[in-house]
Image (cartoon, rainbow, N blue to C red; front, top):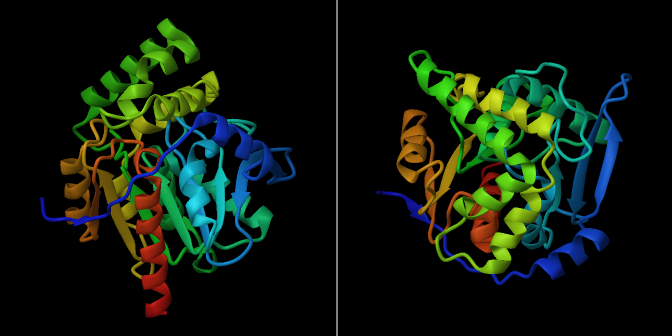
Length: 300
């Protein structure tokens, strides 16, 4: 596989992470419209370019902590809880599309009166980020769109059987095990095979904070949407790139690289990282983001 590689490792302890969540990377909420809808989020850093982080289907804003801590040395970081996650108000539609999440994303950024320099979407968050860039006005476009271990969705024509299968399987697991049971049985699949017990515990802790209804909506979006439909509408003035953990068994590197080739985007591998690459290798992922920000600044 011909791809740029980013390298790093990072020790991690859940007790330290929880202490920082309560002191620095604290949860906040903001009203985003006159209907009382709110978005929960976390922020870090006081100066520098603004990086917006979007989590995936089994995660939360808090999960970004190890990576956000590195980024906050030179950047401002905002990480949201997607609608239906954490304290964020769910979407009205039981089967939303990425464009619906993107609408909430735009409203959230407007409520905070900020324009992102970079939007990083991980897994299902990559679909949301792509939908945002496809529709956002020029004044709210990021300088770079970064897709990390992107979920591509199953909404393409011809994928109907796979779409139904994915949705049925995920919802059956939820119905049989519940949120806690799903977290216990699935958390290790998100990380590299030799992940530490502390890293596994961190993923499990985040998964146990999922909301049943929000997860069901996210499953509907994953099953019914298509990232390519949004990337094809990306403005030429908004560059994008893709990275993936080299041992990702959920969104495998081959599929991520194929997506990059389809849209002629740079592709990077994160060595020794699984699907939750920003937990497996937070320094490496932060370096990938920082390099993109620096490149855009030099090209401005």
